[in-house]
Every structure is written in C-alpha cells, then in structure tokens.
Image (cartoon, helix red, strand yellow):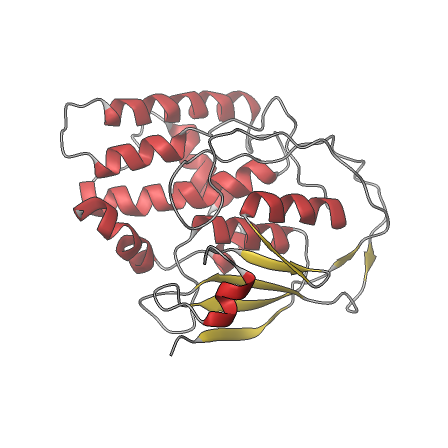
Length: 276
C-alpha cells in the first residue's frame, strides 16, 4: 500500500501575517512546466513592483501551517525527493518565513487519497483555504498574493533571465552525440546568465533574492550534480559569476540547505532519462 510520510511541522524563525492583500498582473511563458513531470522547461517567475522595505511586519505563531505535498526521496526514508519544482515552493515558504506541514509522497506508489487531491498525480500541491492547489507557478503566485511580505516577485524585465538554462541542460544531459551542439547551447545560455549576474548581481534582480532565483536555483543544483555524475562536466572557470551565484548566493542560503534534495536522489532521478 502506498504511504504518505508526514514529517514534523516546519516552523521558520518567524512567520509573516498578511496585513493587506494586493493584486498583480501575472504573465507567463506558454512553454513552461512547474511540477515534477518534465516536459517543457521554462521557469516563469511572476512579477510585480517590490514594496518598500519599511512595511511593518506582524510576527505571530498563530498563522496556521500550510500543508504541502512534495516528492519523497527514493534513496533514504523520510527525506525530500529530487523535484526542483517542489524545492521552489519550499524555498518560497522558507524565504517568507511561513510555517508548513511537509508531507512526503511516494510517487512510485501513489495513495488513492493523493490522487483525489492531485488529479494528475503530480507534486507539488499546497492547501490554501481548504482548496488544494497544484503547479509551482500557481502556488508561488498565490503565496505572493496572500503573504506579500517579504516581497519576492521579480520585475518583468528580469523575470525570464536564465529561463532557457534548464531545457538546454536536459538536452545536453540526454545527448549521446558530442558534436550535436547541445553542450554549446548550454554554454551559450550560461554565458548570457554570467554576463547578467556580473552587471546586475549578486541575484537576478540585484541585491535581493526574488522569485526568479527561487525557480532557477534548484535547476542549477540538478545541473551541477547530474552533469558532474553522468558526463564528468562542470561549469567552466570562464564563467565565474555563474559559479559565485550558485555557490555563494544560492546554495549557501539556509533556506536552500534546508530544502535541497540529496545528491544521490538527483542522480537516481535523472538515470532513466539519461540511460533511456
């Protein structure tokens, strides 16, 4: 019988109480995927104008934890699985200091009750006001609308930065022909990103982390582990700002360390796609 492993309640250092609500115009790339079923590979972080940093925050332990269903590890019991879209949602919860109840779902043997709340059987899924919401794009948008502080949305002119890295990474990872141009396509996207961070960093939107970083970061983590394992490949030293972005700006954050998958899960997760 399929099992759902419910971990202990996750309580960040502080949780933000919504003091006001805002409405945003949300635009998306039509070719995107935001759950753990890889098909199209564009991240589409929502965007709106960052509000003033002086907005008062009410910190309260009375905020009800949000229920979040995510992929379970296939290598170690009661650990997070290797879904970058799940990590994106968890990163958003962590960065917003929102408490949540984490439920780890075995996607190889999905329980019936899970299929009732996620008709396609995909994660992540988060419960808002007695309604289960799927798709990391929709979930993170909803979090931004309901809990606008601290603001994480990325301005429209920067929201697509790095959006093609994931798809070119996957093409290169799956490639069997060293001369098919997939490596160069990935290097081209990484080079563009390197230039952007050099001029605008340390994050995509400058000094503050935003939704675009929370979407791209987990994908770069997969890139590093999977290409290192299957192709003995790493980001070249000629792209120092990509390296500093991953190691210093993203991977070293407490929120990232708390929500990342085990390297062995990332390797196992990509194995069927690499080996066929």
